[in-house]
Image 1: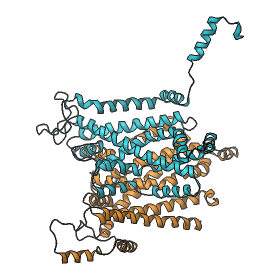
Image 2: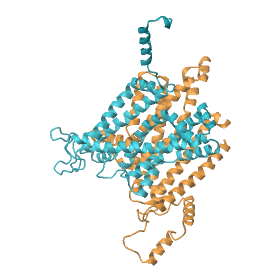
Image 3: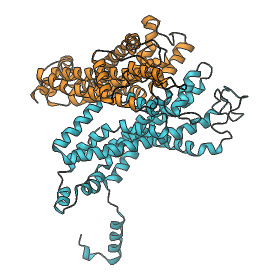
Image 4: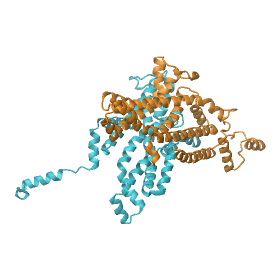
Length: 307
Length: 303
């Protein structure tokens, strides 16, 4: 187990460095520096500014400074939000995005696994057909179409739920964003779960369990679920990546002050430090998640250790 | 039955009927199975209608897609004055804009998919055919890239290099090739052990020609299935970017742009959101149906 973790870490760290390098290079390639101005500054002032931001050093030196700052957890000042550092912006948005993302993935996992398993067990019944057609809607209706329609219907026509704002994390304000964000994932997860449940139900060890006379309940809980949930664990990381990108749009639509919103504003205004800070944060989170899902998988599936 | 004893006329008849029986190839079998699949056929019909409408519809409508009219702002759908789907905040006809948007969305879907298929097939065949250490390294790279939040990459690319349609094609294509590369690699590995590849090798054909002439044509099935499932993903991606204001720019339009505008104005003008949304969802659903149908048709063991 420890060997596996070390092996994965050995891959994860270079990956992160490559991402940071990529972001850094893109930022340097970008046309127009942060201090490109219509009005030419006196050369002395320009020199001072450049020195203050280390722009007078060579590119490799700048990269080293950048990386060492990041390892200290410092993403530098924001270019466009004057008087704010990227850290402050990210910290202010993080709780919102984390609440949204975590609750969506939990909802998606539980509902997806539950619906998929039931559909797989009751294959080709009405229940199965209904779940599968609803999940098809989840796949075909992108979240940026679903979200406005949901808020139009529940917020404006029925007046049941608030359509925008954070309101200090009031649960009513969160229902619509979480629904819009998790529905596509519920759809994908329940389809995967259904397929793998059907496959597991047809395998030999389940036949053995049946012939031993175990009850259906125990077979499902102890044998089927444990085997058929493995693909879902592998899907955890891509699902989270999907949620991260999805949250960018959902935060925009529902006016939530999360990281995704800063990312979009930063992207539209060419705030390179902010954009790259968010990018690196997302990549780090994802890599940690992949590590976590690999470990979880090894824990659940003894065959992985043997390899 | 002894053939010699038959009279000449009957002989001819039998021979003729034998000639008229056509062998069933893999492809005609697949076509038959596809047309038996009701969902796939419905998808094909809906998609063709949307395609034809987007291509030729604007010719028959009296408004232009960028024609503004300050007297007809936010008009609800109306059959009398020719604004069948209503108008937007600049008084432009929504129907024409949806059709133009459809052209662009579908074009981006197809072209970006082709870019990603090109990269994926090249990468996958090389990795699978060469095997060994090269394969391990190449697949490791794919695995690492899988862990990236692609969309964020695309957004950064669009930010850094400006919002340009051609860049959009390449950026989307460049992030969507990973799954293709994996599928192609797996198929290539099983293909390269087959006798006809051995024969070509023995005949001294170069690796490049073996890949192009023998491996790739045999991958047609999975590639086609993948393309139909990829196009909707790309359309969503493009709309996503356009929704954020990073994709297609005015006065050009795409479904993503229209949905984005519509969701901003939905309180006053529901039609601006519902109609483009419907067109997009119908297209995505039909492509998914066709893709699923093709997969079942081309690979009957797996469903």
